[in-house]
Image (cartoon, rainbow, N blue to C red):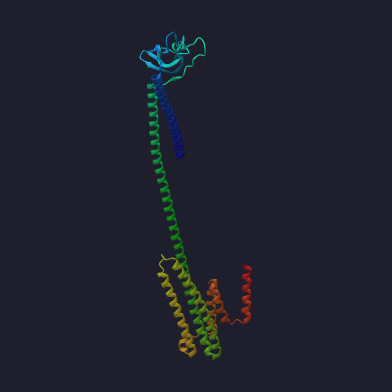
Length: 390
């Protein structure tokens, strides 16, 4: 990728700069060495006691001059060709009086046109041949190499600077892209979470609304059943009263009252459970408007209160023996009223849910005067059916 490419370029640039610095350092060391050598040669030449200009310093008599060493040689370019300059070390000695005048040495620059001319000049007929040192750089050549090295270092430095600028720009762009991606991912996750929360709240609201509507429907159906049962019971009561069965009527009314009271308590507990569940759901959904549910609850509560009031008035009228209030249904035969009541009761029973059927079965048992054995038999059958299902 881009980062690995930039790293490799940076490594190559560093290696190239390091090589150029090593070459430049070598050239500087060579220049310093030549400068020190030239200064030393000048000092030795200044301190020399003998020279070619002073041949008398070695005493009188025959003298001999020989080349001892070729110290340095330099090749220079001139307009008419190349020239070779050699720094030669000479030794002059007195052949007649070697003990009185020891040999003296001095150095001198000499120019040669060709390398063969230099070799001929230093060739010895006897003894060990002289070694020629490698060519040293001329001042002009040293200056050129130094300038070239400086130019190379400057070029590499400029390339490295540009690379650093490009790398910094690329790094900032990459950081910006990463920040944009992180911000985009965070916004998407936030929107997704908020959408899921709203959907859950809406689904919970729909479920609660459906439960409340179902409860209201059940309450309305139950109230209709109670009203119908009340009408049938009134007709039966009138028929029983007309035949003079006051004791039996009182016992039946007591049983019916207890059954109605049990059903009322059961319905009250169910209503209380639904109210608590609705209140808990409304508290969890703070954003959902619970006003309409509260109004429906009040309506149901008011309907139930009216029903209790009506049942209480009927019971009190029965206790007082108020026949005028109980005669809400025209007189008819006892059998016909019972059949009508049983027909309506069975139709409602067969068209109701399982939860409603349990309450209606108690009313049916009371009307038909089921014995304890009948009730026990029905209970056992229910338990067997439930055990078979599970």
